[in-house]
Every structure is written in structure tokens, then in C-alpha cells.
Image (cartoon, rainbow, N blue to C red; front, top):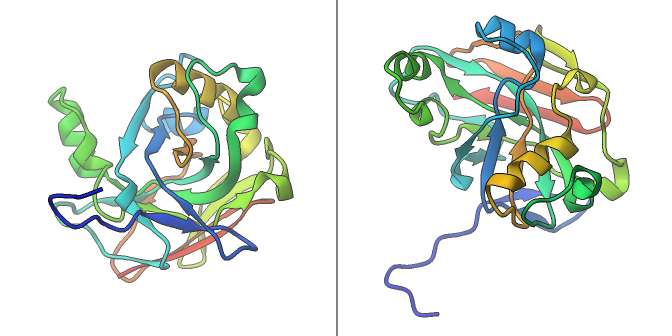
Length: 227
């Protein structure tokens, strides 16, 4: 194909135990999928249909270092289970949703909380609070053929070795299969899509020089330094 400008390199994530990489097409994120986090954000944790927002594929960080972003004085961490889709579809049933999953990873939904709060107060889209450069650090993807489909297990995050977030995957209001089913009612999911599944309580501010370590039992560890 002849292109008007040079093609860019496709963003990709390492695959654990392999030289292959997982190409990233789109990043979807689920909001307020843990009851305690919904409460700490001032929301009602009633089990309503999940809502979604997006980040660009180029937001992934696999180097272990991310720059502190501009236009914020309140950068916050949110550790999450990430689902990597190897198959897609539209109106996928919850019963068949896990067949679409290639594997899982540990991710951070980094948030410019002050920007998000200001935009929310004005009734505007809070995309610039979420969808900025380097806002999606992620660990290697572990194939589901190796670890199955984790539906319980500890999830947590430390900042400079101090515990900040802790919970269990079993605490998710909407489990992975239901998330995929709900999302596929809105859009046709495609191979290469990533889905960040929400964060437990304990989100908080990080500063330049901080080191973040997220861990999900049975999935892996993600270590990121804020440059």
C-alpha cells in the first residue's frame, strides 16, 4: 500500500515466554468496577451496566519508565487486570466471551485527576484526564493457555515499597466475561484490543522519582519509575 506519509510502528506488548509481541489495536477501560473504589470517588457502587472510555494504543509503556505528564499537579495510579483479545466479534455472549481472550497482563490506568475533576465539573468529556501520552504502562501479556482465566486472586500496588492499593479480582462488580459481552454490544471488538478492567480502592497521587509496583496474583508484576 502506498501511503501519503511514512507508516508508524504498531504499538506492541511483550508476550511472556515468547519472542513474539502482542500488537495493540485499541485500548478500552472500564470505570468504577470495584465497589470500594466507586465509593472513594463519590459514586454509588450499585451494579449498573458498566461504562467505558478509551486510551490511544500509543499510550502503552513497556520500558519500565514513564515521563511525568504535562498539564497536571495530581497524577494518580490505578492498578488493573488487563485483558488482551485474540479474537473479536459483535454482541458476544458472556458464555462465549472468554474464548476471545488471548491472555492477561498487569496494567496502570494513569490519571491526571485534577484535569479529570475539572472536566467532570463542567460536564465535559474527561478524555484529557485519561488518554494522554504514556498513560497505560503494562506488563508482558501472559497467555491464557498458561494461566487460565483468573477470576480471583490478590491485586495490589505499592509506591516506593509502601502499600497503596489492595483488593481481589473476585471483588470486580463486572467480571471479565460480562465486560466483554457488554462492550461488544457497543462496538465490534477486534483482535489486538486491550481491556483495562477497573481498579480497587486506594488510588492516590504519585510524584517525580516515585517507583510503582503493581502485582496481580497468578498474572505478574509491573514495575514503573516516574521519570
